[in-house]
Amino acid sequence: MDPAGEPPRTLRGEAPQPLRPAQGGRRQGRGRLVGEAALAGLVALALFVVTAYVALRTYEGQRVDREAMFAVSGPQDTVQNAHEVLNTVSVGTVALVVLGCMVLALARRRWALSIAALVLVAGANLSTQLLKHELLSRTDFGLGTLNGLPSGHTTVVVSLALAALLVSPTWLRTPVTLVGACAATLIGVGTVVARWHRPSDVVAAVAVCVVWAAVALLIAAAAGHGYRRRLARRGQGHWVALLGALTVGVLVVFAGIRPSGSPGSLDLVVGALSLIGLACALAVGWMSHVARHLD
Image 1 (tube, rainbow, N blue to C red):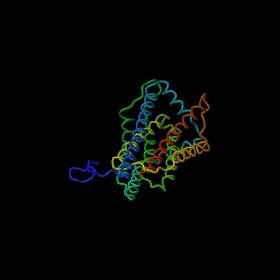
Image 2 (cartoon, rainbow, N blue to C red; image 1 turned 90 degrees about the horizontal axis):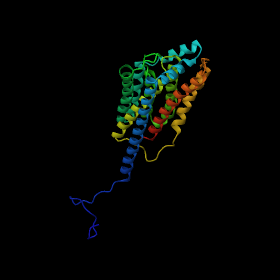
Image 3 (cartoon, rainbow, N blue to C red; image 1 turned 135 degrees about the vertical axis):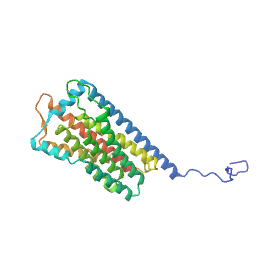
């Protein structure tokens, strides 16, 4: 108030307008989204760096990784089925799912989310190919020098699952979470069963996808998306994703996947496949949690 009891005025003689609660809440929601995306991206980046260093640059890491892959065994029919499932991951599959994601986002008038989903899938898959074929190499400890880190098949499926969650409406998000976690875990485990990849290749691929998912969320935040003021129940997406990963674990057991019988093979198989399932469930569950809160 000025001495005459009048409210302060701007140079144009108008009283300044206070920030409306809705505006303040929206700005706070964007800030929360940026903070969570940045934190998840940094954690995933750190996980990738540590995984790549241990699995590619240390003798013990290479040895355990290789032994874990060869510790997994199963009937010939099961291994052949794993090859057939992996062969379904193709450029056509990627194009079809990406197109579906963009159509779904555009139908909901979520223009920024359609772009963010495209950036997520393209960025994750291009960077995986660049890292695997151009930037990373295995130190020669006599355990093989052909690098497979990160896994391209895992990157394709996990990135598509995260993109689908980003654009899905609320009523579709729970089934997408379940299917996404199942598909990601199935492909990740399948690459090890078929001996196309070592377990570290799969974990590194999941980390790459989460980094690009964080970038996609930052794009969404820059376009005005943020967390709702009233948040959905916490933890629901994580539990659904964990259920999907556990379902694949049960199927793997019934399919006859077993330790090879060599010393320590049981611990290696349980540890490697559990780590893959947990990584996939955490990634899909996290994106489901974030997408459920987006306005």
